[in-house]
Length: 405
Image (cartoon, rainbow, N blue to C red; front, top):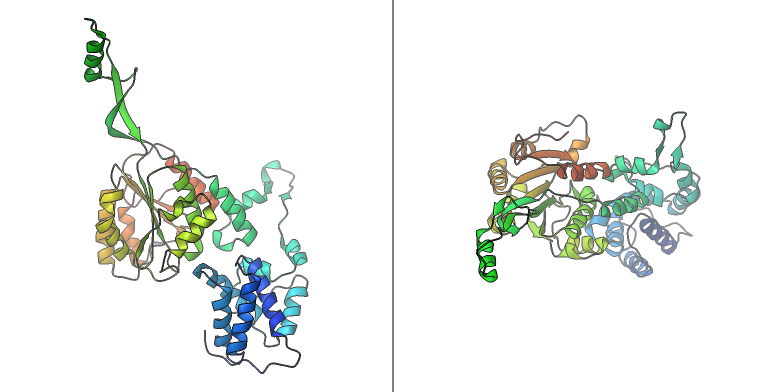
């Protein structure tokens, strides 16, 4: 935040009520702000003063935000709410004007912030109708269908809550793989001579009943490596809800988050409540919304965790945009080693939501030849497509770098 000097406070300017209205807007945008935080914010602003804009911003953010994932919403709301020095008139125009839209400087504002700073009447006017009736029934659609294809980045707070509820219902029916063990089966293809002889000895008869067996199957371990760097932070929280649904749907799921370092959050995601599990996971990560060092984090995983979690034909899901700030030499070696250590390596990349996407970044070019499947992940439909694709029988290896249809 650049250092700027705010104009002198005009007569009649009430700082406390305006901070309270600002806190209400943050709460409506999904940031948990209670009365205690509002009082702390007022006390902090009174201590640092309002003459310097950067001090005013730092005082509000330090008292009203507890988690890093709320900083982006706070920044957008701060620019939109406090951009006019005449705060009282600005407040009235934002809270009581009908259907007025105020764009942010240098870009468009988040729907969560826009909805929070608008009146209920203006939100109802912008709200899409539940059903649009056409002459042909095939052309009708509902809000649920719109929600399936809406990007996580452009969802409002209400739509994010609906998307989280839909994610809880998703299943990932991974095909079971044969193991080295056998189990008794009266219709099995193999004869179990050991069980047959034991049965004959117990019965004491000369005629032996043949016992049969078949090869036992089991779901392979699932390992998820999710990028939580700054370029992925808008998608990471929603994808963690998806991973939480996988964790509670099956056993032997190992989840790691990485940005500039690797963090194992498998235990944090074991909580039954997805919101509590995600909060615990984000609290345990020190580099959330930071830089990206994919090669270094994969090297740490291959050195410390691969032998523990990649046994018995594990399936690995890599969630990242592939934008690595380090040299690609380490990344190429480590992604190749990871590919050889697992049964299948699936790469989920939100950049694939763009029709004109081309793998031009060095990190993307390095990773792409070593993955079995390349899929987009940016909305509910993409998550459902992932679950549907993994439920179908697939060969052990596809053509390297093949992009899923």
